[in-house]
Amino acid sequence: MFIVILSSFTFLGLGCKGLSPTQTAAITPVEINYWTVFDDVDVLRQFAEQYKVIRPYVTVNIRQVRYDDFDNRLINALADDIQPDIVSIHVQWLRKYLSRLDPMPSTVSVADVAVSGQYVKNVQVDVYDQRMPSVNAVKANYINTVYDDAVVGNRIYGLPLAVDTLAIYYNKRLLDRAGIATPPTTWNEFLSAVQKTTLFNSRGELIQSGVALGTADNIDNFADIFAMLLMQNGVEIANGNRVAFASGLEKRVDPNHPTMETLRFYTDFSQPTKEAYAWNDTQDGAIEAFTRGRSAFYIGYAFEAKDIRRLGRQIDWAVIPVPQLDLQKPVNVANYWLESVLEKSLHKDEAWDFIRFITSPENVDIYLAATGQPTPLRSQIGAQRDDPVVGPFVLEVLNAKNWYQGKDVAAAKNAFATLINDFREPFGEGDSTERDGSLILRAARTMQQTY
Image (cartoon, rainbow, N blue to C red; front, side, top):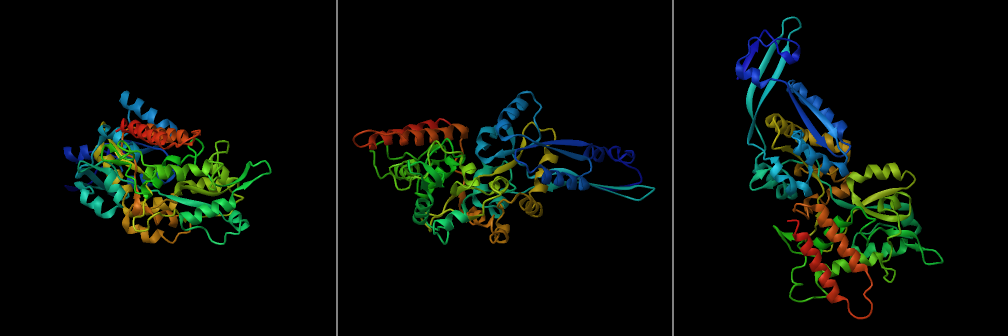
C-alpha cells in the first residue's frame, strides 16, 4: 500500500489527516527496548539511528546490562512483566530461555516513510510485508554452528552479529628470551614452548608461567578450553539431550578412555611432578598473568583483545591458531550471542525487523570492524583471514562448535570444575584409575541433570 499525501504524522510534528486506518496503525510511534551485555552499545546505537531514518516511527533504546547481572535482571523483568523486546542471549543460555523467546516469523509488517518538501510536506508511506531470513538461508549463509544452535524445531530463535573462537595469544619477547624463533603450530611444539618459558626461583616457586592451564578456579575460559580439548580428542560431550563424555566407563574403567586422556593432559600443567607444570592455584587470574608479562601464552577469545591492549600496554603480543590433534577433523569452541525477541514483546514485527536490519551483511561488517570479532557469515570469512589479530580466530570459525545445549551452563561448568579439581587431588598409593573413572561418571551425571 503506497500513498502520497499533503499532510503529516503526529510523530513528525505534523498531523495525521489523509491516512487510512491501516497506515495510521502502521506508523504509530513504537519504542523498542533492547538489552545487550558487552560494550558494543555505541555501534548498536548507531544502527538504531540509521534504522530510524527508514522507520521514523520506531525508537530503539539500547541498554547495556552487566554479564553477571543479566540473568537476574531478565528473570525479574519477566516476572514483573516489564521485559525488554530484544535481548542478546548467549548461545549457551538459549535452551534455558527458549520458552520465553519468540520464533522468527517468515514475514513482518513494516512501513517505509519518506518526507519531502520544504513548505508543503509530501509524505510517502509504504506498508508492506518484509521477508525474514528462512531456515534454508541461515543454513546457507551462516557457519554451521549458527544453524545447529539457533534453529530449534525448524524455527529460528535469533541471529548473531559475530561468532568467537579460541586462539592463543603469545608474548613475543618471552618467546625470544627462551630461544623460540617461531610460535608453535602443534600441541607437541606448544608443550615444548611452555616448558622453555616456565621459570622457577631457587625455592622451586613459579616466577614465570608458560601458560595458564590445568586448574579451574583461576582460569576464566577453563571450561571452554577443556571442552575444546575433549572434542579434539574425539569425545562427544553430548548427543542431543544425552551427556556422552563418560560413555563406556559405566561398564569398564579404561585408563586410555579419551576423556581420561584429556583430563591428564589438561591437569598436567598444574602438577609439579609433571614436565608440563606451568601453573597452580596460587597464581593470579590467567589474563592478569599474561597482561603483566608473567605468562608466555594465553588461550582466549578475540573479544578479549581490547582488554589485553588496555591492561598489557607494555607487552608485545601476537595471536596464533590453537593447534589441532587431528588436522583432518579440526574443531574449536564457538562462543557467541544471538539477538532474539522475547515472546511477550508487544512490538514483535518491529523488533524482528530491527534484528534483520542489524544482521545484514553490510551492518555485520560495520559491527565487526568496531568490535574486532570474527564473522558468522561465510561470505565474509575470506576478507578477515589476513588480519593479524582477528585472522587466527577466523581460521577456526568453520570448525567451531557450541559444546553445551542444556538449560544451566553455570552448573555444567561447575561439574567440569569439580571434575578437574578432584582429579588433581593426590590418590596415595596404588592405581587411581577406578577413582578417576568414578569422578568422570559423577560429572556426567551432574551435567545430565541440566538437560
